[in-house]
Amino acid sequence: MAGTAGLPGLRGGDHIGITVPDLEAATRFFVDVLGAEQFYDIGPIADDAGDWMQVQLGVHPRAQVEKLRFLRLGHGLNIELFEYSAPDQRREGPRNSDVGGHHLALYVDDFAAALAHLRAHGVEIMGEPVIRQAGPSAGQTWVYFRAPWGLQMELVSYPGGKAYERDTPRRLWDPRDPAS
Image (tube, rainbow, N blue to C red; front, side, top):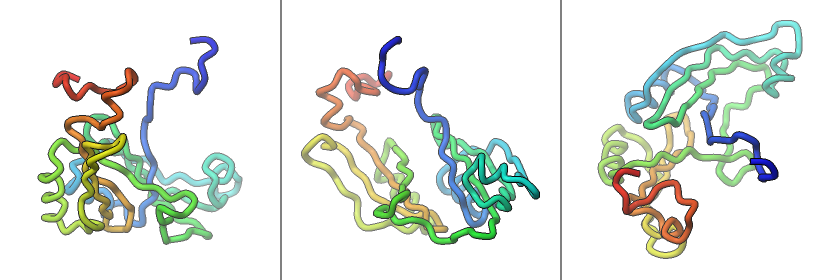
């Protein structure tokens, strides 16, 4: 629509790329513990003499993507796992409070069952589940957990919707409609 703010033609997110220290171990976690489906691999990707890696990907010119692997979680969250080698590579990830800090949130229908599953697989759970009783997130339950290499993730559920969803016509789904 002409004159609308924002990125023309935006439909939503496509994937998130995550650099991991060990592609095979990360794949096992995403597939065996979280239930991702593996699709394809690409690599290696490098430019031995030029600056393609720096210009295109913002990394050291001699960095190399040993391999990237494409996975899908649930109904469309695509994950692109990268295993890099680079002369200036840092091995520690940012904390949530650091610039560039992040976490990956996964929505589940049955929070208790999903939490029990993570615990049964020896996944580090960070603290205790938080149940929101008031405010715009009322109805939501969440807890952070870590992938084996330290990536912070969040388990989240709000099967009855969040409170703010009841007051907006821009809702993504209607918790009162089982077909949505």
